[in-house]
Every structure is written in C-alpha cells, then in structure tokens.
Image (cartoon, rainbow, N blue to C red; front, side, top):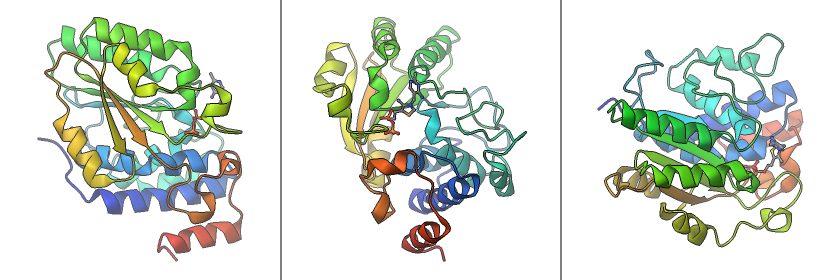
Length: 272
Ligand SMILES: Cc1ncc(C[n+]2csc(CCOP(=O)(O)OP(=O)(O)O)c2C)c(N)n1
C-alpha cells in the first residue's frame, strides 16, 4: 500500500519538538501556526499518504501541498522524521544558503510546491488533481489551507473549478484555528457559514477535531472518492496546540520563544 503505518501521536510529538527548536534557533515566526497543524500532518504522513521517503518523486505518490507555507517547520519536521532527509538538516532551517527556507520550498526533498503567498495551494492542487485524472492515475492530492487564507479569492475560483471537473481525487483540509496574524478570522474577514459555502460550491463537506488522531485517520480513510465531488474537510484546531502558554494566543503568530520559553515548552512535551 506504501502507507508508512507508523505511530502518528509519537510523530506529532517529535514534530512539535523539532518545530520549536527550529523556530527558536532561527529566531523565526509562525510557531503557533505550525503547532496548529502537527496532528493533521502527522496523521497524513504516518497513516494516510501513499509515499516512499527514499523515492520522493515516485510517480504513484499522493501529493501533499501545504498552502499555509508559513507553517513550514511542521512539514520539514515530518519529512525529516519519516526519512526523506537527515534530521540534522533541520539545524539549517532559516539560514543563508539552506534549502529549508522560512516559507515552504520545493527545494526540500518531499515538498511538492513552494508557497507562502497565501491562496496558491488549492489552485495548484486542483490542477494536479485534474492532471491525475487525465493521466488515468489513481494518486490523490491533499491541500492543507489556513482559515484566514480563505479570504483570498483564488481559493473560491479553484473550488468552482474542482467541482466543475468532478475532482473527487482532491481533498482540501482547512486548519480552522479561528485566528490570523493579529486577531480572529471573524474580526478580519468572516468566513462563516463555511460548511454551507463549501457545499454550495459543490464539495462534499466533513468536520473533524483536527487534534483527534483517531477521528482524522477514520475520516481520511473513509473519504468517498467515488461520490464525484472534491472533499472539503473543516478541521477544528487550536493555534499553538501542545504548548499551554502558546495555545489560542495570537502573539505566537510572530513571536519566537526565548531560551527559557523553549525549555518550558519542551518540558510540556516531555522532551527535557
Ligand atoms: C497573499 C498574502 N497576503 C498576506 C500574507 C501575510 N500573512 C502571513 S500569515 C497571514 C495570516 C495568518 O493567518 P491564517 O492564514 O489564518 O494562518 P494561521 O497562521 O492562523 O494558521 C498573513 C496575512 C501572505 N503570506 N500572503
């Protein structure tokens, strides 16, 4: 089946540890955004995606696109922890001449598409899904979006396009943590009623707790890809999940943890 079938909870914990260390070392931003998606990304890499870490461009692989490219440390950590490249390479994150840039880069083994300017992952993913159909290939395309990103009109164009072409091999997952960079999504540009909107655009809609591994695994394995519709998964999450003082706190969109804060955070993750 080419699914890794490893423990997703352990992977998510290791990803959080790596993400915190990377952001601290590089004095970078977006740790809250990365912690928000660790469980979703871990369940995808550990138990959902068909992939081969030693053959990152295997033609049959499922495609995963991180559209909220600012949360790249979560994906870099997942790729290193599952063997796409050496874990020690994570030490170069955010440094001059490193492939591991502060927004996700396709120069990193296992990354399909560079993003960072929000609103590009879903249009690209829809094109990939259409290509798979035209090539009569059965690989699927998963795109992970942020909630604030839905303010970009390109997503809604891609949603019309995907429904029009019956792209049942396309899965959009919205990391619905309800926060943006400076305040809530609701105060910035309201996206509710999100499920109704996605349904009206012709997608099959599901809602899930984005930190519940069992629920995520079940949902990913039961997607009705034969229904002739693309799938829109609304994953309810907490920005900063896993580190108590970062949870639901907008300041951790930009702030980088100090040495003391890093130690506290790692302690909470049982990583002394
Ligand atoms: C087109 C574009 N406009 C603005 C930005 C700057 N920016 C970076 S992250 C962000 C919003 C963060 O909120 P959200 O998209 O909900 O992601 P979260 O970090 O909460 O997961 C913005 C506006 C960008 N990256 N791309």
